[in-house]
Length: 383
Image (tube, rainbow, N blue to C red; front, side):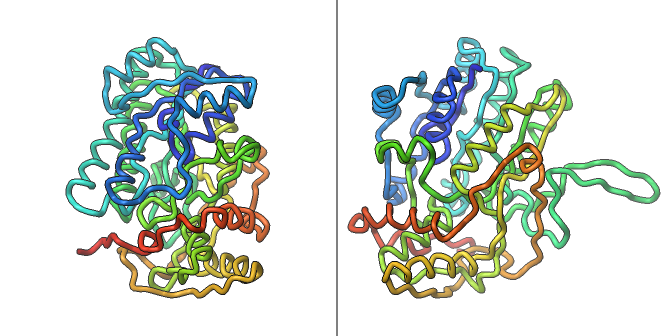
């Protein structure tokens, strides 16, 4: 297939680019290095940061028998997007090209506006570029489980059947995001659902939980192919951040009571889920929503897992509960359904001690590069 990946320089985009190229798809990798820029602006550089896409392309070609094309540009620019779609004529577009951090979106007005403008305009430009140039293209959009919030009922896979006063209808599951970043994802879903209904687009919207890990089939070949790895409070996901704190000898920071429950997924399983989404597209005029995670844990449970791995390696590890910088429920009901990918054949890599240990060892190789100050919370929801 012709597959375009928006946000190919990212934590998910780079491994996805390599994987699909090695599956012999014709891949166009698109990015403008926006995530690298705002990471530098906030003193949040990654512990592992790959070279730019041009250099990555050369390294990939030298090691593997496949390659991919590159286009550097801004996905919020409709004319840039439209010209790409017109020339490449993708069968599938995978949309990762959004500001990925909830804390970043909550720093101040300017970071909030950048998040809003980037995330909504990239999706809106993509929709119209597809409508006008390749309306049968399958859009795979990365959403987030954070769209749902923490409701006191089970979270279904995107939809909810409502019975009211003797009548029934199927609606999008109610969204109640807890950050501006997550709110932009809610608005993405609403935009896509409108254009699916109005113009017959076919869209898969993936509600993904926090991702962790470093290893895919390609990155195991050589460290040159590792994805970028953030451990700071703004761009680092929970598991990656806690592992880095353990390596650096910093107490594992648990926000508040630590009862916050979320669905987690290994990086390698994210790639598998998107491969399955490509192979199982929706029909025209269908918005297919799937919850993309494999296990549910509280923050306390994650911290205990990391502590156990650290201590088995002979490194003392302390868990420290601190005042929660976020505005969120710390103890709540949480049961999210995630059966669709299992039915499609996903065999997950669960969060075992061995998997966490492997990540720990790779971070340990870069122990001297860790900046302990940025692993602690610098952004607060309530000023």
